[in-house]
Image 1 (cartoon, rainbow over the protein chains, first blue to last red):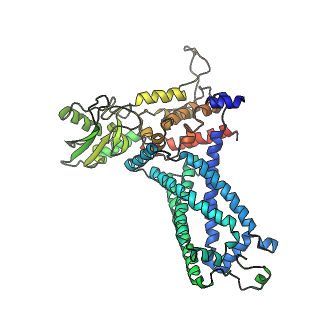
Image 2: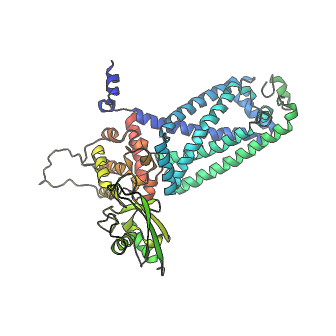
Image 3: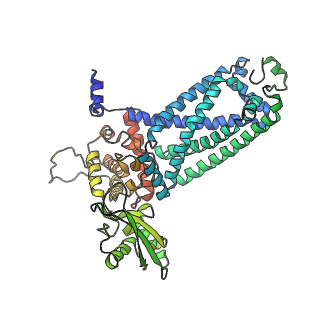
Length: 256
Length: 259
């Protein structure tokens, strides 16, 4: 048997050499969380382009499909981004689940602790765990859908999915959970690593301000997709074509 | 010191409330008595001016129930013996003015530590274990220092920083308030991190960050901290636990990864 296997099995690996893994795992958990939270806000900003009009959303979609660089849409580029985000998501979930209460004793201990202590940050952590648990399912489903059908992103395609495919409850739940989880996570990152070096009251104020902003933006955006989807229900499956001459050369509208 | 002055100022500022009768529902239990079951027993006392919870408990014990168990030594927030859960939060009884409490109160022993009986817990046993595990004593260059030699000089600012962390009285409030410790009993706790931070500052200690990484560089140490920061919020000595834990996390992350 290998030396490493023998001493690791005997729980003596840390005594033999310095184990860098705990440090790397902590950094990776934080860095993947930071990336995902920032991505989530950027994603929300792009999705919210529907509030500026269908053509604006169509333009953003085409931009990420490389239309303005290659002169032709490549939805596969979106799949590549989704695959990278999925990788970060799985890594973050795997690392974060280490901190979850994993048995009855731990669940009972932390719940009664938070209830008795009435301590804001401890309660926030429980919210973070609950929303994180829900996101295992919601984000996985969303990422799979976007990875497999990247061409179905567009003003009409997305709206049809939200309304006619009845996915608005899914997006509404995901919006609430992801905004809460990401906002609390960024706040916790700041206090965990001590940067930015601001008081927790200020950090919390910024955190709740940003969460409220993105929730309002997200709800307005979801409402816009629902409205378009409702109005477009009779033409379900039709793709958006902007009224521009350049579009005639695009080879397709949204999702073609 | 500033916290003591603040408490005194608060005491002076607090207007004496006439005829306030306080109820303390105290968790009574004797783990050594097989017939004993945990239960809340109410005690009523009349509040006096500048009364602390410690004084109230003494009055209850002297006039109502001599069997009530709770710990105290210094009565001045120095020994850390009288920590208990006051309405769900850890506090020092001697530093808690009854004027800051509502009429109805619940008192319980600190969780996490070995229960001796009623409000009395054996924090010393856990603290000793933590201290031995984290080796929280000065590791000097020489095994047998020359006691006749004049001590090396220390920069007053550095001495002040060390003293700031040395103010910890090991009351156990930070551990009782820690959600991580409640879930994972092998967690070192803020008191342990504070001591590591203290010895790390001390130029007389020969240990390096590599040595400290061996002690707290894992999930039972600083990487296990979920930064709920109740430790910081309940510390009766107002120690800067939040900044110290964040600093240790950065140092240990850099030491472990070699970044």
